[in-house]
Length: 264
Image (tube, rainbow, N blue to C red; front, side):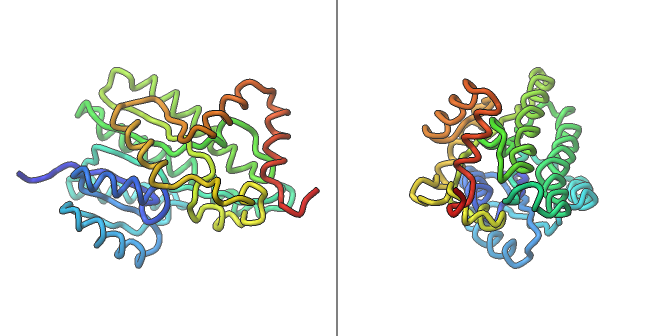
């Protein structure tokens, strides 16, 4: 039988997104993988195809809203309606807000928020008449507390978490499920891209989660139709603590965790 099950995964060439794409391929889902780097896409396309599924790689710059719209338009023109949407792509920028580059931060807001809500809107409009669909949004334990030294990233994840919970409620009778995955610090290239290698949070890299473990938690929650999953016991404790303290206390605690190692 022809396999018409497709999953659209952003950020599928590395980290948690890559591990999620692998799990989907192993489960028999054809993949649509999206990233900016053609070479990385080609490498991952060949790898994912080894699972016997079709892989469509599309090079798009998700910092640009026009590229997000055109991505879904290309799928529609080719008669492809993904059953699963994984919004994984996201970045951060490290430093005090007064010192960081505003253009970089606007890019991050466009990637972490604007691209996600556009893709999700188009996915929902496509899947509503079909009465089924699954969405996994990469939130973060960062969504649960203010984040000095990483303020814009934390702010974007707070938006994603609140918005995900809201649209889940709106869609509860539609057949479309919406799940949030909340990882903590994970062993990916995220910190390098954020210029965050001097942060105290990376002082013991043995504490970083394995991206496969995080992806498996998210994948299980997605397939169960759960509302959210905080990945890892330590992160569950972190979220519980944040929920019990004032915002100012949570901000101070996070500042101590995230400030540079040479900062007193």
